[in-house]
Length: 152
Image (tube, rainbow, N blue to C red; front, side):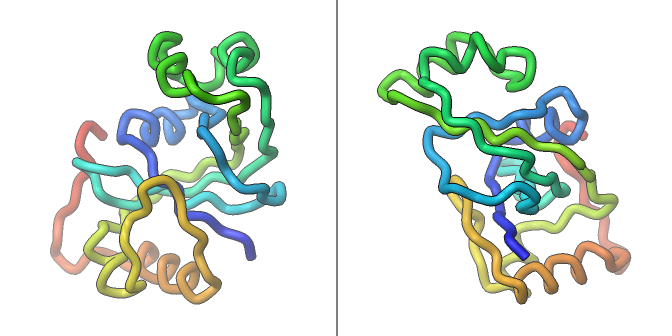
């Protein structure tokens, strides 16, 4: 199984989970096959994996065409997009589908404790062992602990 832990700012993670953002803009991203599972890690203040999405396809348009082609899918302001892509010739647009919000987010402390991994700055590959552990952790009911995601 091909899987990637994708780090997102909370605003964008929530937009993906709400269905208002159906494509993620990256300055660069390695080639991945359609169907790759994207584990959605929301950075500070959430610091947790909130759910998954499936990679449909990665488009690689010229940076100056991203707004024209994807403005209705990327949920980012034009000025911010221009600044983010300002020094690039091409961008990576991850078109996603089959988004699933988890009932119980998996906090960073569990990634560290049970998987032995840190949150990525952009992304990191997950092994089959990581995936199995992550799925086991997320499926369990919290043991009297409450955890909420900021702004959720």
